Length: 420
Image 1 (cartoon, rainbow, N blue to C red):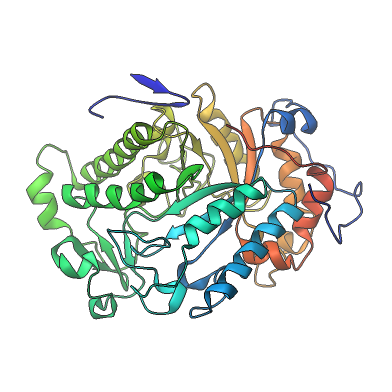
Image 2: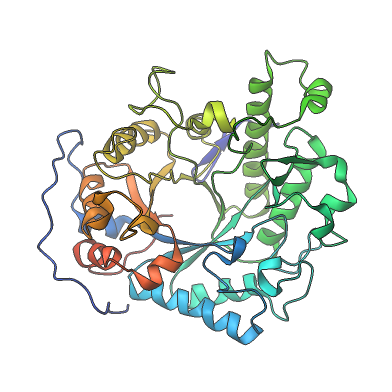
């Protein structure tokens, strides 16, 4: 084993907040399942992640639409950063490689379609470079969010830029569920996606490399991810295809960790998976959850292993359920992750479903502006929870139910540095 900072692996392998709700009228939360944690002030002094995701795929959060002028795009971006400071956050997680295209002048992949509406068209400025500079000027960390395997949210290769590697090398791409993906089982794909992502790390002073929950694609009923030929070629040493697929993702994680450390030791590596590794009914090591997706089995992402092996610096599971949810109770899922990271040196941040707050399509719990604040009340009882990241920037800006303002009033009364 070799450890660099918090990461280990086997070789070979200031501002005030406007319009806050009145503090002090929160609802008491039972913490019977949690160990007593440090007071919030002490946790903030030691470093507490307060982050927000800024999604660019499909113009989710930014830019608000494709084709805006460079000046308008930059103004929208800095408005998001200013809002993050106003809400006393300390990190933004900016999606910079949404569909195998780039928000910087990459020699590997075309300019991102979300900027101009035309993949490969120069937007006339450097969004990632500007974002790093503007975030740091405001005391915010910039975590560069990459999607390793997603190529397109459609299956029409002719819609990709003519120079797109997925058109140049069509044999590396598979259609599934109405989308295009790079085949994770191909060694040349694994090397290419690392090269493409790490180009940004070499060029810019990013604080972290960040991945979300997309590895092998989420299951689609009645369809199969047709990597039989790749498995026949490379999977002979494995008991079954599922084990081979997990090994492919393990290799990507471990090799990326090694390469980040070799390139810039101060850059952290974090992953934000779907929050259920396995259900206890499937595996006694799993969480007290039931039904639904299990990353180990369905996405072939052994998220628990990555923590236990110390291949990553932080894990940010997307615990997008309310306290008391019958299938996946927020408190029970957090408790499982707190136990999982204990003693590993891997930081635990909790991904929060800000997007559900005030959404009439969601359950009654999400109509209560205090739901998110109760989440932070609960996690204060766990020593190994070192912060939260909110999805996403659009709801941070509008905060329709006042849920984030309530979090700030109750928990973020002063600014705090991010953990390092």
